[in-house]
Image (cartoon, rainbow, N blue to C red; front, top):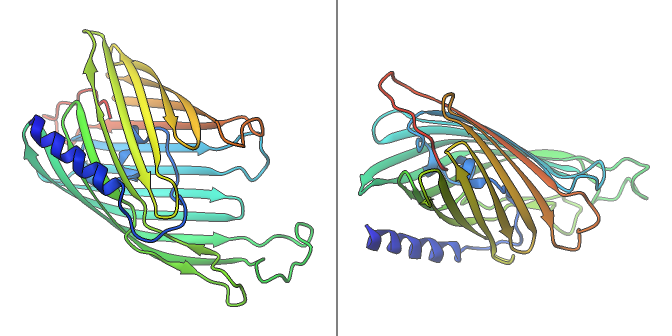
Amino acid sequence: MKKFTTTLFKIALLLGLCASNGFAQQDPMYTQYMFNGLVINPAYAGIHESISLTAGTRIQWTGSGSEKPFTNTFSVHSPIQERLALGATFIDDQIGRTNRDRLNLNLAYRIPMGLGKLAFGLSGGFMAYNLSAYSATEVGDPNDPLNASFTTTEPEIGAGVMYYTDVFFLGVSTNNFLSSQVDNNEAAMPFFQTEQHFMAYAGYVFNLNENVKLKPNVLLKYVDGAPIQMDINANALFYDRFGVGVSYRSLDALSIIGELQFPDTFFRLGYSYDLVHTDLFGQQFGTHEITLNYRFGIRKNVLLTPRYF
């Protein structure tokens, strides 16, 4: 098992450092990705062995103005057979005048292996991209060809691989293999171009004693043309009920994470606060992110236990 997990980790690092053409990070970022895994990897579907519902809201750079970026997510997933699981995700991402709504269906095929399962996931759906034009009072020339308003829909196809046990996970994924470009016929440059994003991540749960667990996680994100971004997290969970942790995101922010678990109802509440360490420091009041998760059994003989990711 040790040799197998070491090999998987090497593969994750290799794939996380490889990608095709791109320009910059475009996909939304999530501080609490370990609690909302379906939005970054379709192989996550079914991992809770129950019907699992997750909703999340991320509001960036509060206090910086009325057009602060925000992201809303909703996901649902469940096993439908011993080896098959289905899921669906919806992401509403807004930055300034642009809005992207993404809807994807997810399928995971899971193979029992060692103490856990090796899952292969596929996702497919579409992205609706909307750009709103500036008003005449916001720009000097409302007839500028760069000042456009339009909506377009583009297909998305993603894939991922994940190995997990009750206390360990390792995965690699991309949310979209396809590249698409939205043009204005009079503009010299495209208004929007999607690029492939690759992610590799891993985490483990250490039992420090009977009542305290330590959960370190790491996430690598890469798109060609942008620096590799790394998230390093460490969360301490007490009595399987409440936790606190810190996260460092390279080139961006330092975060504080808190979580509450209610084992009797299998409800989880997560909150994080990001404080940027870039040039935006001092120009805004930080980023807030909230996640809510609820699980319930499919059959009466399903035994629900606390989940750590």
